[in-house]
Image (cartoon, rainbow over all chains, first blue to last red; front, side, top):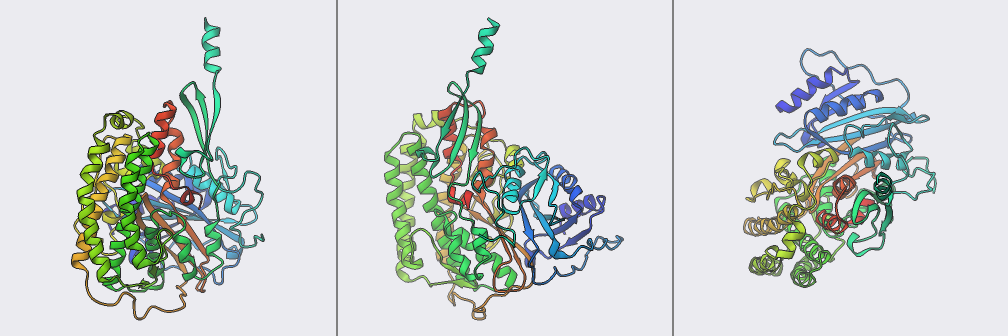
Length: 176
Length: 372
C-alpha cells in the first residue's frame, strides 16, 4: 500500500464508511473500494479534491436483475479498526448503485472507487459538481441513463439522449 | 452616457455553431452567446450520434462487444480494443502470450501515429492551411495499408481477442513497418518546417486558449491536453500495462498551457511512438499469439473490474460488472474527449470566436467517442 493509499484510508475512516476495502490492484484494477452513505459523497469528493485527485467518471448500476447478490467482501481494514457496519438490509434488487472513479495524476498510483447505494424507487443523492465541475456532465449522463437525481445539480436536462427523452435506457426493466 | 454603456452590454446574440460545421469535426453543436466577436458563454450540446453502446453491451456476449469498441474513437480504435481486452482478461484471469502483447503495442502505436497525423492535417486545415493535410494523409495511408494487411480493416478495428490477437504479423508487415519508420522520420522535419515554424501558425496558437493544470484536474482532462499543461501523466508510464515497462520512451510535456503546447505534445508523441514501434519490432519474441487456455465462452467471476489505457486522446477507462454469466451485467465506457470537452465552456470564455475554434481543434475531438 502506497503512502497516498494509507493517508486516504485514514481520511475515510474518519467518515465512518459502510465498507472500506483495500483491493488487489492486479485482479480488480483499483486499490481502494469505499462504500458510503449517499449523504457522504460530497464529503468524499472534498477529501479527494484535497488530496489532488481528479474525478474520472461517475456512473450507475441497476441491481434489479442481478443473478446473485454481490459477494461479501473480506474487509482488509487498517490495523486496529473495527469491522465495518453491515450494508443496509434492503434487498439488493431494489437498489441502485452510484459509482465514482477517482484517479491521481501524480507519481503515486492509487485508484479509488467510491460507491453508494440508493433506493430504486427514490433515486436521489447530492451532486458533487460543486467540488468537481467535471462531474456536471457525468452526473447528467447518469441521470439520462438511470433517472438518478443529483440534488443541487445546475442542469439535469438530457445530455446524450434527445431533449424530450422521458425514459432511462440503462434501467434493467427498460423496454424499448 | 451610462445608458449607452449599459445598452451596449446588452447587445449579445446567440450564435449556433454546428451540428454541421467543418470546425466541429462531426456532429457537435455549440451554443455560443456572443458579445460582438467575443464569446460570453459557450455551451456544447451533445448527443447527435449517441448510439447507447453501453446498453448494447448488456445484450450480447463479452466477445461480441469487441467490434463496438472499434466504433467509439474511430481514429484510434486499437487502443479501445486494448482497453476492453485488458479489462476482460483481468476479470477472467486470462494470461496473454508475450508475442501477442508486443504485437498489440506495435499496432496500437501505429494507430496512435495515424490518429495524430489525421489530427495534424485537420487542425491545420481549421486554421486555414490546406497543404499539410495532403502530407498527413499521404503518410497515414501507409499506416492504414500496414494495419489492413494484418487486422483486415482500415478504420474500425476489431483485432484483439481475449488472450491475444486474431492474426500473427508476417515478414511483409515487419519490413513495411521498418520502411515506414524510416520514411516518417525523414518527413517529420518537413512537417515542422512547413507548419511549426510558420509565423501565421505561431500567431494563431501561441498564448491562445490557456488551460491550466488545475483546470484539467477539476474537469478530469487527460492525454495531450493535460501534458500540454505541464503535467507529466501518461497511463503507459504511471499505470504501466502490457509490455510498455520494457520499452524505452519519453513522455513529451510542455508547460505553456496554450494551443501551441498541445500541438507540440502530439507532434513529439509521433516521434516517441515511432521509437516504441521500432523497439517492439526489435524485441518481438517468438511464440503463440493466442493464449492456449483461453476459454471459448467467457464467464468472468462475479464482481466489478476496471482497466485504463492511454488512448490517442487521453485516458480511456472501462468498468465492467459481471454477474457470472456470459453477458456483461454493466459496462461503463469512460472516454477521454468527453471530459476534455467538458472544460470548453469555461476555457473559451472571453475569447475571440476564431481563437475558440483553434482551441477546439487543439482538444482533438472525436464526436462518436463523446456521444458513445
